[in-house]
Image (cartoon, rainbow, N blue to C red):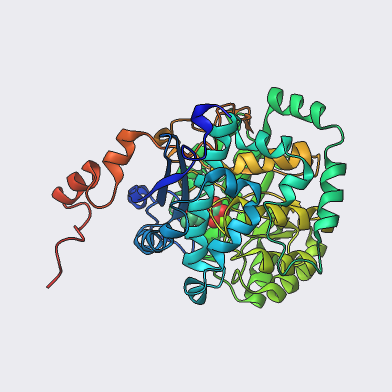
Length: 455
Ligand SMILES: C[C@H](O)[C@@H](O)[C@@H](O)[C@H](O)C(=O)O
Ligand SMILES: [Mg+2]
């Protein structure tokens, strides 16, 4: 072992967390029927080793919720500081369980909500660090792993009635066949994506048309549009967008949880003539049987159901997948407990034949999730047929290694790590509420300053 790799140098000596926010609500970027004024934000974690090497991780939030996640990360700090990082990687699943099952914190989850988001931010930083230590992008780190090592990153608790460790090993061994060829193809062509950038609910129909054309010209063939606030407006919006993209392109619609089960079915029957491939989050993200009912009713119309961006953990994913309640599984890189908990979701989806089409956008979600889908392509499912990763053109400029999109494909990241490091000047500007950009917006009265108590 070289001097720089001694266990003293590999000890985690710091964990810092920041509340970072962007004023996206001003332009209605990211708006949908449920979240009408999101300010795209993140809880941004930096894990530091004695050697000076740092790993960065984050979880996405929509504004004020960030302060709650930050408090939770603070509360988990002591579970991480003092650990030797290579010991963590030896049995990452065991360490992951120590974060999600800490006896006092577990009560306010368990394994869901704020505690899961905080876990994800920390765990994502540890994966970034691992990639940097072995000098590989995370997708390649995962794809190069022996099945035994990959499986050791997973906590199989509550999953074994659907997937056991042994089955996972078998799927992973099989998944490796033809790996080299797919890796070369990935490096050459990238992985297909669709865009939501033309379809935010707060955008005018003219803006939607203009943006749809822009992304068509950039080579996109699949587009997602927000629906669910007003049926007449939705019909108009879909007509507008079909006018631009034509009928040979793929259209998805997303209701962000606003409907009752029967309402979802009735609403979608009216939108069916516009041939959406899927309806996303038609109702509560926890309602497995409701989703199944909707999926059953819409199947004859050729419309699938998609969900997952707010699925709280692997157990709920298991139920969605087990019951055929979703046809498109939308894992999210900053939800559940980060990479370690997403891996078994991929394994279950693969076993049960459900397509994974990750959710992305927000702050840093595209940067992270591309790695997971690329690993799946190279070393598990072996196919990108009928699948896409979501792409949203927001906040990439704040990252040191932003996503690279060419001809509607994510190009495989080459830099070691998880593409999660944010630029110093972006952090200085957008840390909330003391960042320069926020101070200036408070001074101009664009936003009210939360530090000034309201009388
Ligand atoms: C508030 C956010 O922008 C959501 O609308 C967004 O994540 C959305 O559900 C999506 O699928 O991209
Ligand atoms: Mg969505």
